[in-house]
Image (cartoon, rainbow, N blue to C red; front, side):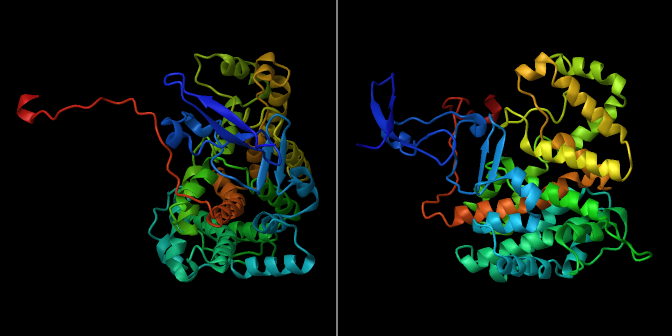
Length: 430
């Protein structure tokens, strides 16, 4: 029995060709149209790549209709409950959960790589004090290739591993330094006695004038956030990292490109927009008015944090972070008015036919901003923390692409609808 295929017919010419169907572990079958242009002389038109598989990957799977997210086959709910961020990092990078000896070695390597070159202080001083931390992150992540150029042979597996370790380890130190610089406080060195999430909170909030103790609940919440953001299939920033890396750019440059893509308010900046929206609503009694504004097509107001490009069901990450946000607020500040608005807003929206019919369920951004606020993360650092969590996903995806023997440089085609061929007219005759 031959392989399954689909037949594509060009009605304009009558030509027909067969193209193989590829069957994934999960998800819909994929038509392999790599030879479409050479066989039929046509391209496909798919803005935003809504129906295009740009690569083959073993890392992450999403079923948007059922609300499923898997890292290397493991459900996000189980990992969130039983694992920790560094173990998830190992899983994404290596494909399997580590044995204790493997985990201890990996965690030790990440810990020992957390310091950055002292020259970064001079580099950091070149930014304006009022620069957005994400602007600093774009520059500093890219600059790692200038400070750590001893392991940039991208086809060398050992160099791939070292670069991934450095990025995962140093991203928290860079992130905290960007924040400290923006508020004029001394930059803290990492503390090797602390865990990954604890260390970041220590570098963010400790000052030389007094002792700082990391709240274990805050560290647990941050660790959960990092797990939930670790990878998410071929999203905008991950696709950017793969595209940049396909040119054989070094991993630091590719990661810097990912930081830039993540910065956009439609991607990593969405959680900041959710908090701004909740503050604009201001009070539970104002919710019906804003619901009506969101349904009015002539009104520019949008309910941020509802709906997702992939999920047409409740985002599984939103369920997990919703519970954490309630736990942390109840155990620290008591009732948070923004959480009350968020909970009531979700309740009202999920009973409204407008949102139900359009499958506009809360996504991870809806509750992550509230959780950041509860653990004292400033609003302009929300996307920075997202960057920290996503770095391991970028590196796993980058390494998978580099190691693919069939890899080619990314080069999308286009549907040109500009001017036809024209002749140059001298300036004095125009």
